[in-house]
Image (tube, rainbow, N blue to C red):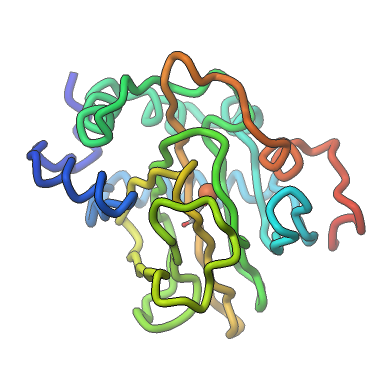
Length: 237
Ligand SMILES: O=C(O)CCC(=O)C(=O)O
Ligand SMILES: [Fe+2]
């Protein structure tokens, strides 16, 4: 059944071509206004359960994680809406056509969908690649300044986490209600810091994979999203 809450683009070979070339595809306005309001309320409610992180991720070139997070295992227990959206057959079918991969949900309940909130001065989601090949990132809140903070930076077709500051880096701004699809295992990416107080950037990351790839490749997501994991140096309050 079509998902009336999402404004899915019609598939065209051009979408597939752009995604293959760039490892990134913007999906502006994917979230319809009613759904955006519902996700705003839902994520504000979930934020009360979220965990603060402030550490350097060893397995990702010691890049910083200064952010508030919630893993999928808790989201599933607390939200009906987010798991329903994640599993939407029409959405998964479209992603599969764009990516040209037999796309399926991730089995791991922690990593399949996560909530990432940047809301303090200096908050950032540092450089990394993801464990699974596809990430659909949905924007619930975002700074409106296109030149400003909390931008996505990515370098296509590389897992090298040291390419920042070179001409290969691309930068993308997204508004609340927007989304993007990323070839997240082979596209180095990060979110630039919020350098001013009062900004908020709230995203849901939906991870998808292929039937043959249901095993995480690094410990990074488990380190970030499993509450029992105390990173070295501990968490900020
Ligand atoms: O917030 C973003 O735009 C990126 C999120 C991300 O890379 C992740 O959750 O793995
Ligand atoms: Fe990522």
